[in-house]
Image (cartoon, rainbow, N blue to C red; front, top):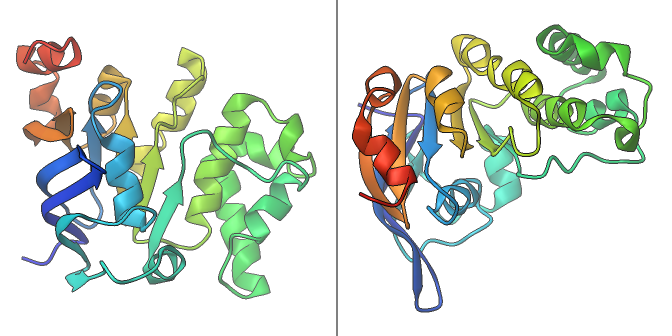
Length: 236
């Protein structure tokens, strides 16, 4: 079976330190998959490896069945991989609408349609469309970061710690859009420390501990698995 994303024995090293150790995973089109684990588990390293910001030490990385190890990050974006990095990183001197416009690969008419679609996903952005990025709240910046990644019409969306620094209410507003995005056809990989929320909004999950895959399965089943809690407490 051809997956939208597949890694085979993927490893990444920082010098002598193994950040990821022979990790094998897959993502199907239209599903949401969580990467969960404590700080240092390797979630961000894996996300950066998929988008092309980190080189693999060994293993394979397939996007839609094609080996993309030699493809640069900006070309992976063109192929259909969207990326919302940790820390939001919106353009502070551009308005909400301008942040979205510069992220589009489409013509003017399609870009306008996509922006309207983004405002449907996060109505709060429509109200702020003329506001500069730096004036937005943390939650609004995160919404904008997600929508900016969606403006390229990706087939795979990588979200790195989107709830970081957000209140529980704003975390819900951002994360509860993930099933909607996946249902529309864009596969989502969510790297997240908020275990409970991540497992509520995804179909499947991979649990990482110090760069190693220790558990995987349906998110609904992992929610009731005591071993997942032990992993977060460092006891597995």
